[in-house]
Image (cartoon, rainbow, N blue to C red; front, side):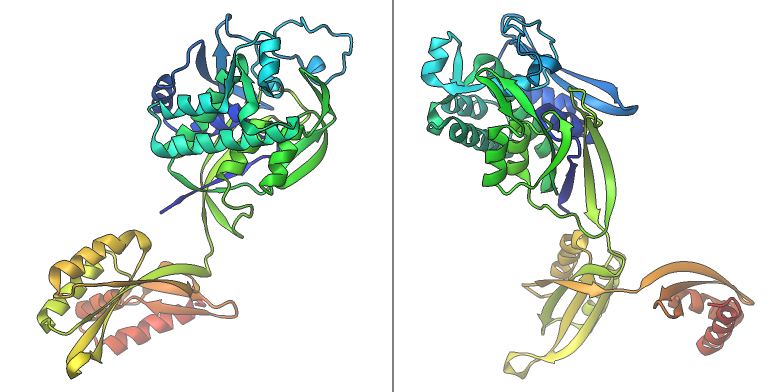
Length: 437
């Protein structure tokens, strides 16, 4: 069955938060390190640790750049533009909070003017393609970069191919984005639900000056990909361009099912200290509705198979997990008497049951139909009776409850006490009635 990921972005989202949440959810750290080592990049290492955020245990993912590759990260005061006299030669906080995302993208000519090395989108594509990431991970990473480049190009008013990364930002972002793609592939995620992105307010400082929050790249991505933003009164940037691009690339739905079952939870730590708890919570979920259900029907018309073979097939199908099996007499072409085989089963049992039918009958084709069904709330119980315990199914209709003794259990009592089926049934019914069932 397909796996569904729910990203709870009440504290926003960034690249490193996403990687950490997916690792905490169960993505293979060794596989991730091996995949990242295949990228033709140097000058960095990754650090994966556990941290406390508002007392909650969370995974922390960091890209640590070598001194000769390292950029100058912003402290919180400078980042949000509160210290207008602060020099550009500020102390490096070595926090890698992705504040430098906002100085990564620049015009090619500007890059040479400032004397920085640069990487454009074409160079980044080559890095991703030449790695040993799986084809699905490569596709995801390239899609994220494309979305990010288009948003930044629009913000700066230039063609996509003229937008370039600073050397520092490129290494950090390539690692983050590749790591997200590898983890999603490793977890075999097929559906991603992101109802909304919580974003802050105020301003943030980039190389060109002080810009508003949400930053232009985030608003461009939200507009182009219809991402719902929930604006809060928190002073600061909660959604980074990389985080928004990740959501735009992988989101398949923005509404949770009415009821769902949580299979596993992961917590990814953010790096900045805001009023909200800086974590991204990721959950593997599956829809859960006791009244609405989905079942599959396998169907085949058989006109040249013996009754003995068909009887044996029914036994084998039930033993292999079929919910129900029946034969319906039909007339086929040339007025041939035949039987239509119907098997009711769960999706995960289809392949095994089809193999039984093909191996034990003469059919050469099986039809499959996915069917919605309405089922009553029910539970299995053991009911005490004067004859001994009997297994029963208790069904709830809302206004009344009904009890259905299990056939095999009733038959056991019939043989043990040498009574007829109806006699045992009546005794079981009286016992249920006396218990108020």
